[in-house]
Length: 196
Image (cartoon, rainbow, N blue to C red; front, side, top):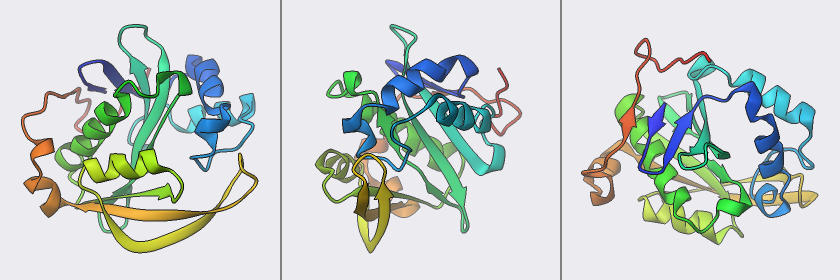
């Protein structure tokens, strides 16, 4: 579990089903993701069943919970791939956009990946039309790799172009934004596996 000033990032639970469906069935959210659209009960059950335990299969997928309400307002994660490179992203329920939550989560996620998981590099991808994601990655020091991918977007119903960006460990260590931050990690068995 990761705790920030206003949020808790924890493993998914079976009772997160409705909040997951609500958040991912918003067109404005789904058009930025590779998730199915519409997002069904079966989609949510399948995803949650594969993400009940943090760290299983080198995947750390977190439900984002607003402390004040206890509501699941989105998701984020890190998946460790070959070469100790972390991948992953973030999504937020449309009702929680423009509150600074994306910044808070991405900061915590990045620090978790480098300081707790010990990755050498983080990679991410955003669609070329997603200016919010572009600015978020720039804010946290990610730089383009020069690579692009094409993926099918279910909400839009056609292929879209993705821009790949990365943050190497050496660059992360030099950036002021990552210094003197207050984030709490709850450790379980040294590999953050949490069964609830």
